[in-house]
Structures are given as C-alpha cells and as structure tokens.
Image (cartoon, rainbow, N blue to C red; front, side):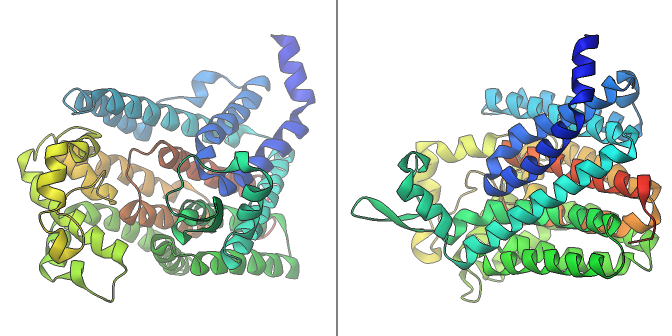
Length: 435
C-alpha cells in the first residue's frame, strides 16, 4: 500500500495535469463522457488527499447539507419501489447517490490540496476548457466541419443512430444543429469556474485580455448554436454575476428565492402558457411550442398522485405504452403539431419532480437545494459572484432542457460542483488580488 501511495505522489504532477486537462476537454467534445470523467477526477482528488495523509472520515464527514442529501436519496429509493420502471429508477437513485458522494468528497479533498497542486490543476483545467471552447466555436461556425471530416476519414466514429443527420449516397453530409446542444450546455457550465481560475492565475492587463478572449469565445459559441436554454442561462448568469459583485448577500437570497419559486410557480405558469396558446405561437421555435404542450399535459396529470408522485422514471415508461401512443400522441397532433402527451420527460426538472416524486420529493429538493445555495455565504467574498452565476446557469439548463434522470446530466451536475470547488480553493490558496 505504501508503495502505491509513494508512486501516486511521485507521479502527482503528471496525473493532475493529464486528468484536469483531458477531463474538461473530453466532456466538451463528448458530453456523455461526463459519466467516466466525474469518476476519474473524483478518484484523483480523493486519492491524492488520502495519499498525503488525510483521513477518509474527514472527507465524508456528515454536515447539514450532506445529511439533507442523504434523506433525499433515501426517498428516491423508496419512491423507486412504486415506479413503473423500478429497475431504471433504482439505478438512477444509485447513480445520483454516487455522484453526490464523489463530488462532495472531491470538494473536501481539494480544500486540503497544497497550493502547487491546485495551481497545476487550475492551469490544466483552463487549458482544457480553452481548447474545448475553441473547437466548439469552430464547429458551430463551420456546420461541424471537423466532425464530418472525422466521419469521412474514420467511418467507425459514426454514431449508431443517424437521426438528425442528412445522408447523401450513404455518406453523412450534414448534421442537425441540435446535435451540438449537449456540448454547448457543458461549455456553459465550465464558464464561471474557468473565469475564476483565470482571474486568480493571471494579474494585470493579461488577466483581462485572456478573460475577455475566453468569455467572448464561449459567448460566440453559445449564440451561434441553437440551444436556447444555454443562451438564457448565460444571460441570467451574467445578470446574477453583475448584481452579486456589489451585493453578494442580497443576490444569494434572490437566487435562493428563485430556486424555491421555481417549484411553486412552475405549475401555474405551465398552465397559463398553454391557455395563452403559446403552443401555437409562430414566434416560438417548434421545440418550444412542443414543450408548452408537454408541460401542460404533465401539469394536468400531477393531481393523479400529488403527494408521492407516479415514481421516478415512470414518465418514460408511460410514454412507451402502445395504448398511450394511440390515445394521446395523435389526439391533438393535427391541430397543435404535437401530440397531447408527457413525452419521455417534461424537459423541466421542476415539473418532472412534481410529477414523478410528488410534493414530498419537491419539499426535499427545495430544502436540500436551499442548503447548497445558502452555503455560498461561507465562501470568500470575491468568489461568491462567480459561484452564484455558475448556479444560475445550471438552474437554467435543468429548467428547459433534458430529463432529470439522464446519467450524463447527473454527472455534469457533479462536475459543475467539482469545477467551482477547484476554482474557489485555488483562489483561497494563492489569490494576490481580488478577481
């Protein structure tokens, strides 16, 4: 064991540089790699801390936030027992538990890392994010030139499903713009940790030039894409960041209030949008019109199991039933362009929580999320604006995009926590001037 520890410490610089460079880069290029990367980065953070003599009990010491997560996890396992797809519900509860444990332990471990290690990790992270941002910007600006070239040169890299692709003579010649939405969302959730690392790492005029270059590269990539959720997330996080600079306490309470109100108002807002015929509004993209229908249908079904919900992952199972496809998909498709259905998920984590986990699940997530948001007050004052902007960006993603049980998205939530933990601890370790 001692030999293994000594080997890890001798190779520490190489391990840190490789993992913290390739980690963000690979997740930006292949978003589903978040599942593997959260495991590798967490093992790196925790393993190196243990190799230096940290006690594993201290890394996973129970505090109020972790205790609340534990209670929420217990309910997820209980809720899975009445799910229409219990096997998937249990597996997602297990993965959620692992991601919470990994990100929590890794964040605690980073707090004990020495300054040189944090410096190496933050620098490698910045290089990885910068390289990934440059590639994504090039891809969205050239209609996926690099990806199409890779498909042509190496056919083995082509995806199994060709949905969203245009073929000509059996060759992929065009990729749907929506295919890069995952990459753009991952890029948004690397923005604020990267800016905090950069502003801590550099000084003088260089910091502003580099920070401006990185920000505008990510800004351009996001707005050249068609992922409206990421665009909204960027705008909202910028507003929160600007407000938090002079008033971190007031802004933190506003973000916390927004988290709570999102659960309270999502049902009446979804109902009102449908009644206002937004699902037929020409000024909305078709995907947004479809979401209005999804949200209205889901809202209508919530009273069927208001307290405990229909069970995690049940929406997806119900949508696959042949009788539901016949009855609900086509009922209003002729007049609305989108069948009266819940789909595989509601494209809104707040609404999906109500539908699948019920009021009990909503209360648990509200309390646990509140503990996370309000704990921002314990961070250095200069880092709170970055952290609050980061949280706002994540909340925007889960409010309008994918289903809450997608494994890569749960892993991305853990990585988002690990990235901001790295940035904050790097600032703590060696900030000379406030960013």
